[in-house]
Amino acid sequence: MDWGTALWDQHDAIEKHTQSGLDLVERYVKFVKERSDIEQNYAKQLRGLCKKYARRGSKEDQETKFTNHRAFQEVVNELNNYAGQREQLAENMSLNICVELTKYMLELKLERKTLLSDVKKAQQNLETSFKQLEMTKKRFEKEWKEVEKANQQVERVEQDPTSSKLDVDKAKQSAHIRVHAADECKNEYAAQLQKYNKEQNNHYHAEIPGIYNKLQEVDKKRIKKLAEGYGLFADTERKILPTISMCLDNITTTSTNTNERQDSMTFIDQHKSGLAPPVDVEFEDYSQGIRSGSVENQSNHFNHSKSRNIKLLFKKNKAGTQDKHMPPPVEDFSHLPPDQRKKRLQERIDEIKREMQKEMDKSAALSRMRGVYEQNSQLGDPSSLEPQINQISHNISKLKGDQQRYEAWLSEAGGISTVSNNPSSLYLPVTESSPVLPEPVDDIYDEFEEFEDFEDDVPIAQCLALYSFDGSSEGAVSMQAGEKLKVMDEDHGDGWVRVKRDSGDEGYVPASYIKIIQ
Image (cartoon, rainbow, N blue to C red; front, side, top):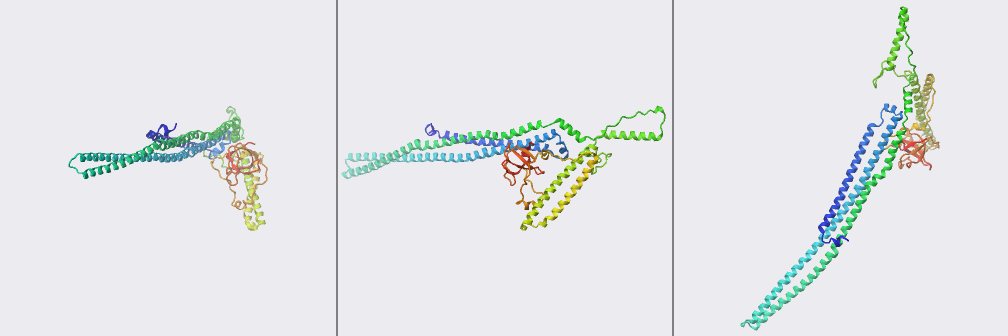
């Protein structure tokens, strides 16, 4: 059963019902908007929390060598990713529900207004037709009364003995005219009545039911669209649950990556001095007589030195201050205890080797560019690269000298120079939400970009994609979550790693989007 048949006489109820439906849509839009604002504020607070506890400063860099400290930073990073998903949820709710329903509600309001206006117009047309019917009816009534008066006048004239035949004919003629006018009004009234009944029948059985049925369809579409909005409220959040679950799983995995034994050994390695504990204090027997002054002075000097060493051993220095008894730092780290000195020397040698490798990479790039310039002089002058090549050669020579000097000091300290070959140690988690592609070291790479290509080198590690990446930026490559890739080049501090897919595609991906697996 439809509204036009069952509710033909309930115009006010229909108007009120359709308005309440639009009000409900508007209330739901406000409800979702407030929910979106709550998610946005929640994400903002989480971002602030992550920023507050994010790793920064050299002291915390040292602490990340411990697995429990590093695990905490990974928890902070995953929580930051979690906050990003809450922001995405707020944005999707605003776009998919609030914007769409608001647009649809405006269309419904306009359509409802048009249909109600049609109802009002039809009602006005019917009322106008009824007024015309009343006017013709009154005119017919008036004319008929005039006919009755004319007939009475004819009777009086005929009964009056003083009236002539001319008077009687004149009265009859006047009555006949009145009767003819009354008949015309009667016919007009009958025609208007027939017209009104036809319009009224069309109004209540066709026009108004048709409009009410259209309003019913509009209301049905509103309910269906609102129901879709209810579903989107859940589906929008359900779509981000896999990523949120991945963040939580990563936090759980991080909790299993802590190693108390390794942290304990790392702490020992950081602070082990290599010095032997003090020897036992000898017994001084004064009952054997007074010793010579030289022996006594030597004993006092020994006791004073030992006492000072013990005090220094247990003394707690304030943070950021240097003990006045400690010697100032020197280049060969000879001011440090033996084990600490060897460790610092090895770290410095590894650092020099990394710097030397960067300089050698730049030198190779300049050499290739010079070859291109020599083959095609229109691209550039080969001699313009000589100053840069000479400077890099000078830098490499200086670094080699530094390396030899530090290796000699290390050999003197009893250590062996080694190079770390663990690829996973080259990658650190990147906390920036939107990293940028790596830029060349020098401006000369811009000129050489069209000729430079990745060398046919071998992978240095394998990695697993934690998140999907579209690779829309220039120089990047796309990947899917869970995909295994080959690491071709490490992160040089810009937050990007060069990888190669099984399909042969090669390019850069964010370092925070992958996990080294071997």
